[in-house]
Image (cartoon, helix red, strand yellow):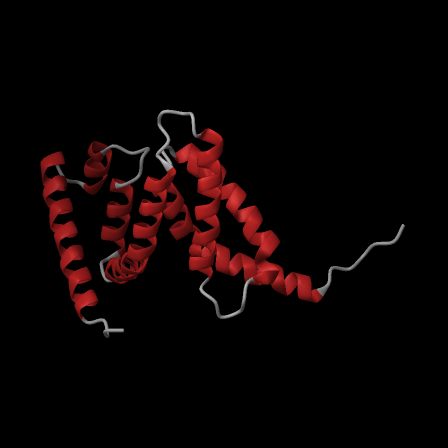
Length: 182
């Protein structure tokens, strides 16, 4: 029985794919999620998309836009899913999905700039404030629990949360206004 040593090129290709996929997976997931009725459907479709992306990664051109390529593949997977589920009354018509997909792709660049600005602004606040904001948006935690752990009343916590959102929004607007026009 002979063991084979993985080809270094295969390992490099695998690493390159994982870097690109993990970087852009949230955007591809959001794209798919906008096109199908449920999170479970989006998860199923995204699994199929990731398989196709890996199988076809060798055809992807270095320096190309991985996110656009992945969203294109996701679009076709969604359309295929729609054909399979076409009789289900909660599924959108293919033309509507095409329109939503097109608009989603057009707005993705703007959304990405906003996400980057949010990350930058989020990094400018204190670690304690970041932790409280993060906890406030977790599904498994109530606002009352977060307020109590912060030492504030629920009303005081909501006022603080409102101020933080306002500060982050102002920061994001400043950062976007400072972007060079492309």
